[in-house]
Image (cartoon, rainbow, N blue to C red):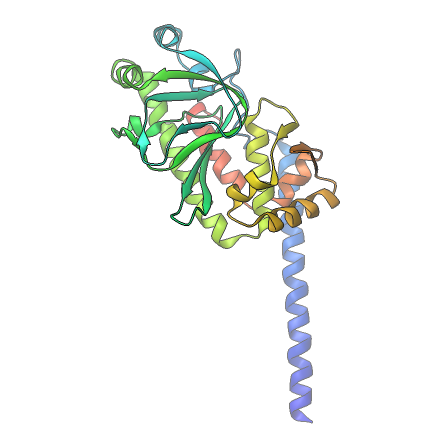
Length: 282
């Protein structure tokens, strides 16, 4: 009898603990949603700079530095899957995305692929050049099609030397990207696939020039999240049933932005906060 009574007490305690954890999660989601109603753009890393939009690094430069750099830039259109740097390949150009989103992928010997970071209009592609390297360790390709400004590696290095504001903001953007990479590693290890999918959709939504619909296949998203396509389908299905987004024919549409923020883990706000710091968004 004592043993049965003890088992019932443990069972009741377990159910109470489970209810407590659910209540905590619900409260956290409610608090997160409430925070988002205060400032809907507080952590959006793709909010364009005033008077210009486009790439935020270029838009934030003083007029004299921007005029120097302008002669070295060429606008290019990037298509989904277009490779900018092969894995362990040379970095011949730096890119400043306007509406394109670029992904950095780590590809293993067995062809397994996982994303280690993404860059949109809040940053520059080819930051290894800023650190003195000429080789890209990850494979780097366009994830979402769009436009970008391209600059040769030699012109990029010269601009770093000659233009102090350009050099300073690139240093800050490099720190922000390193924060994103480390946070992504922690997120992929500790958070569930639905939270991670919500985080990734928000980060992409921020970077596509305000468009609520953008191209995205389940195959590509499986690379981004490091899971099989079946797991992606399940995660997106849960978000769609909640009325947060829709997916059809390789395109995703964000329906409820604030709801998606509430469904995401804290990693989205952390990445956004550091990405905005170079532009005074904190």
